[in-house]
Image (cartoon, rainbow, N blue to C red; front, side, top):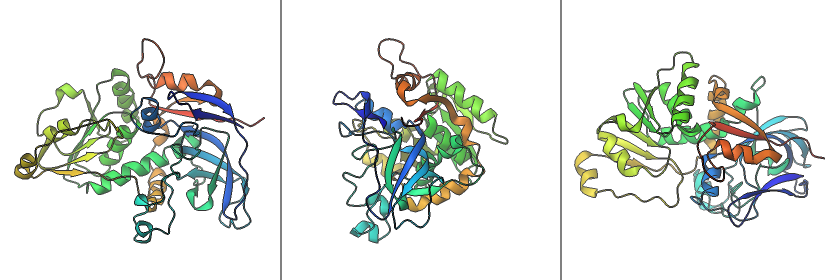
Length: 342
């Protein structure tokens, strides 16, 4: 099969890999239909997040079951499924207390990071990490279920309230999803983005969503004490987010950036009553909630590009990762289409 593997210089290369086979009773092999390019994938290629050289990247996958192990009871060949890539063992002390996202055996089991992922034509996973896609749901809506789970995890950890004024920093796909979900529950939602393309794409998307009241701003238009809940989807804006939070406000650090640093004065936290929230990876128990919520949200409008696996350079260019000058965003959610194996 064809797959995109991470190289030592943090580039991607189209390679040939053996098609995976079921060997354990609960194994499932799926034919990948399409996989979203995540902000974490982009961060890996930019050196902002670690990953294992040689690994097949990708984790936001919509697939079709190709083969199942002898012990599989909930899926059959031909079923459409979405991948839950936040794997857990179910046996360690954290899993046994229900904190599946803090599984002690995650090392070597992070899909697309240190375990082969979904930028490929086929993928092998255990049955429990595959969820049936509701009848009638499009692939473009289903491909955003995993990012939607990340959003629910962070907004639940932030204890989103109806009286909240919410500010979301960053209008990438995660920022747009965060604003979309917050708009369902909060008093006011503002999304701030410096990039003209992404700000315009987000505005066009929200205009297409009936009843949506999300406001788009440039970061320079924001004033101190702007919102009761500030969500940093970039991952490097902690200090600025604290400035923008109201007294007694909450700041959520959501974006992944291993090199980011921020200075926070403990006395300011004390005197202003600020809460800084780090939600971690989502608990997999949230995944079914995201599937149900996706039934009624027009997520497919966030997808702007469909790129065949072999033309992955076009996908990277749309995400501002082109080589040479002119590295600008030209897409919102970009998905790679695996195509049929030879």
